[in-house]
Amino acid sequence: MSLTADGGRFGRGRRWVICGLLFAATAINYIDRQIVGVLKPLLAHEFAWSETDYGNIVFWFQAAYAIGYLGFGRLIDRIGARLGYASAVALWTMAHMAHALVSGFGGFALVRFALGLGESGNFPAGLKAVAEWFPKKERALATGLFNAGANIGAIITPLLVPAITLTLGWRAAFIVTGLLTIVWLVAWLSVYRSPRQDKKVSPEELAFIESDPADPVEHTPWLSLLKVKETWAYALAKFLIDPIWWMFLFWLPDFFAKRHHLDLKSFGPPLVVVYVLSDLGSIAGGWMSSALIHSGRSVNVARKLSMLVSAICVLPIFAAAYVDNLWMATLLVGLATAAHQAFSCNLYTLPADVFPKAAVGSVVGIGGTAGAIGGMLMAEFAGYILDRVGSYAPIFAVAGSVYLIALLAIHLITPRYELAKVARN
Image: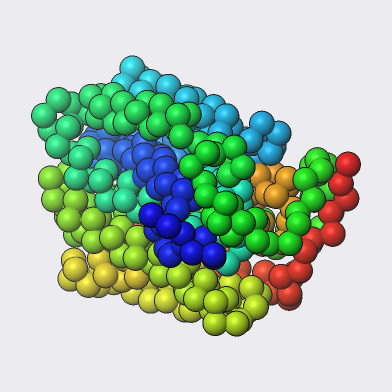
């Protein structure tokens, strides 16, 4: 199979094999984190959890995620995507399978904390690998594709987990799904190398991967990243939008159970529709900005225009709490989650667009921490609202508004996507 001078058509070349591995890891990552949401009605009944108890379990996952994002972001910049990713996956696999050994609130809070530490390494490592293997013109598309793994994981979970649970019990669901990660880890360590070290990369593809202007490779002091506005543009946007995705992930099964009276056997199909739409949104968002860049638009215009379209598409989510028809509510939620993923895959490219490659993992870590802190607040807010008000309407009202606010913040802080002026050692 020959490659053209520009590295080959979409789907051709070694870089797309790497993208496939990132996609698979993200899918497994979301299977592992979403299981507790799918099992929430069953576990809440078995262990007599209140909405606030469940919110606190989610809180401790998010707290660990916030801590781990900073740590893994820095670690991955130091040791690279290959070993950094492997370390994160090994940790989260052990924590995930340990869920089968615990009972009650304290045990779940502990293993969810450990899971959050490990899973926090997924996106810093994945985005580091994308920055290593893809030039700017393809980064949003590659990010959209591997980020689509989140939705595949979210689609598989409500189909696979109820089947395992109804047959073998909920503890077996954690063991069986944990085995998938071990298989991926072996494949990752066998396949992943940097482009220059990978013997299966052709000279033409390597030239395409390295077609962006030369990038400084010096170590970037972590504190210096906090002194540049581009870091704060990314972090503030993540603080605003990440909690909405966490809310969908951890509370959608409960929404369908409470509002539309579905149970473990019946809420699978609506969740599948929601996350299929999310998958399409992730790919469409990446394709949109990449197509705009190919047509001659600047990176600044392409990314922000794509995010604006996405933000507008989230607005109708407020109506989902009032709709009596199950499938109309499903489509409204699906539109919002698709728009989130389209917005998110363009936001994810900001660190790679404006920072040197040596700093990408650290900036992603800072943003991920900000997003996890927002998620902690959302967990407490959702638990409080559901215990006191008993309706998802206030939660969906917040969800519909924050994307336009996030885009405005990005534009005000960094009106042009210019290279960040970062002090380096």
